Image 1 (cartoon, rainbow, N blue to C red):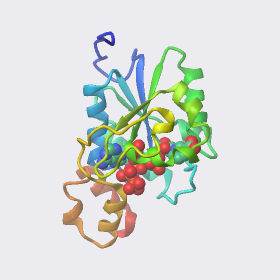
Image 2: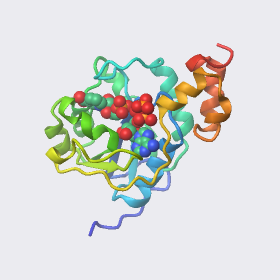
Image 3: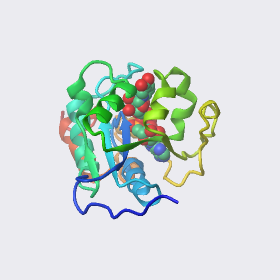
Image 4: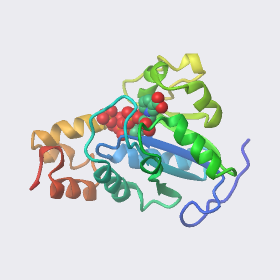
Length: 208
Ligand SMILES: Nc1ncnc2c1ncn2[C@@H]1O[C@H](COP(=O)(O)OP(=O)(O)OP(=O)(O)O)[C@@H](O)[C@H]1O
Ligand SMILES: O=C(O)c1ccc[n+]([C@@H]2O[C@H](COP(=O)([O-])O)[C@@H](O)[C@H]2O)c1
C-alpha cells in the first residue's frame, strides 16, 4: 500500500511523486484534461508535469511549439497539482524522453517519477530510444485507450487496463477542424483551446 500523502494545495510545490505526461498536444483535447485528473485521482502521484514535445523523436509534423505550449497552458495549466513545463524547449534539439527524464531527475533529486502514457504508445516502444532505461527512471503508468490492446507492452511487463477516458484523439480533432466541422469538436476540445485555434488559424480553421 502506498503511503497516503496530502496533495499540496497549489502548484506542485513540495510534490514528491510526480507523473511526467509528455505529448504532442496537437491540439490538447478533453481526454488529456481527464487523463491528468484521472491519474491524480487513482494513481499514487501528487502532481503531474505536462511536457509538450519540442522536436518529436519520430519527426512528427506539428503546429509551432509556442502554440501547442499556449494551448496546454489554457487546457491544463489551471488544474491544481498540474504544471505545464517548457523543459524540452530549454533542452532544445530532439526531444528524447530519456534525456528529458534524466534532466528532471538531476534538477529534482527528490522526485519519484512515473511516466504517464496512453496505451497507444505500447506498440511503438521498440522504436523508442532506450525505453528500458526510461522505465527504470520513471516506471510507466499506462492509461487504457479505446480500441487499443496491450501489444508491444509485454516485453516491458506493461499491459493496457480498461479504457475509461473518452475516445478522443488529436488526429480526429485536426481532421474535423480542417473540414470546418466545429460541431464535431465542440465537446472534444476545451473551449479556450478551440477559441485559440480559431484565433490563430491553426489546423485550417478560423481567421489566420
Ligand atoms: N483518449 C485517450 N485515452 C488515453 N490516453 C490518451 C488519449 N488521448 C491521448 N492520450 C495519451 O496522451 C499522451 C499525449 O497524446 P497526444 O498528444 O499524442 O494525443 P493523441 O490524441 O494521441 O494524438 P494523435 O491522434 O495526434 O496521435 C499520449 O501518451 C497518449 O497516449
Ligand atoms: O524518446 C523517444 O524515443 C520517444 C519516441 C516517441 C515518443 N516519445 C514521447 O512520447 C510522448 C507521446 O508522444 P505522442 O507522439 O503520443 O504525442 C511524447 O513526450 C514524445 O516525446 C518519445
